[in-house]
Length: 404
Image: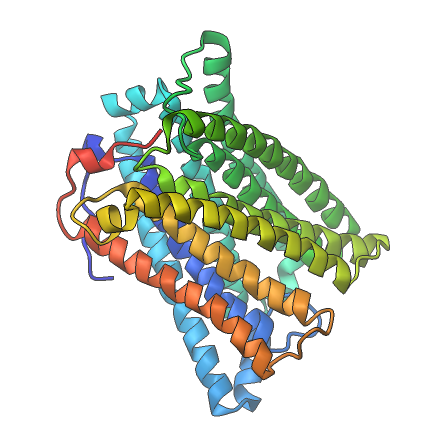
């Protein structure tokens, strides 16, 4: 991690939590190697014992994959923690500056939703690290699920308080600038609620206790509903403003936020379905998963084409990624690459393999998996590239202006 994290003072912006979010998401992509490529009988996710058994009995190629997966999870989990600690320190100090009061008085107040978004990712990353690095964790996992529910619920309440303060202000006093809402920045709140929902849905897919599964299902449904409603409103308002004013240059990456939203919401729905099937005799087969994932992938491709069209017409990559200009909003490009890679892994393994359209580990399997791996590689490059650009030298105040 050869970069220094500076003290930005009033030049800080909560969008920097997206840097930590991206690193945590990449750790998840490495975890999926183990989830889909080694057997883990008895539970829906691999644990330390499953990996140890696969490593002991596996070929040199399998062992190499396991080492790579562990190294990837460890490195990006540590990078996520480092960026989270830095962000929290910067955020606490920044709240005392006039810049915070200014943000709270405009459209950009919704950027505060990146804080619970990244916190929810931290809990996910912590759980993955526990599964892979702590022997015997699964034997006590039923005691951990209620704690996970409390943690995610707490983050969800924090997110609700933030969006409540924002909506309470603009719905009573007005002041929301529709002309400057020419992006999908407001949809970030939906992504946050969906991230909380996918965390709350995890016990539903893994617990053998009906009460835990039911609590997980109900709590995750609440935040999925919140994500859907907030996201629909944000998309409509953003489209309305963009059609009239064009897309905000620095906030243009937000057009791709529907991609990670679809991924986490889709995984939450699959976790819920698994819990209902395992504990409450609901029947959802491979065709149902294939149908859901196909719809989600179609939505992601459509919004991806939209976002990339706007980014290309604006020359965004040449200006803010490879060119001289820097914008902290560029970190929003990491999440779509990570999310599409993750959903493709689910689509291949739970969808295409699930309905026997392709055979696992066949030539066709690896050809389509290569797309997911290419997107993972792109996200890794983006994280290193953006970290180098933003933390290797002082960042001017102009590049930190929050996009509204």
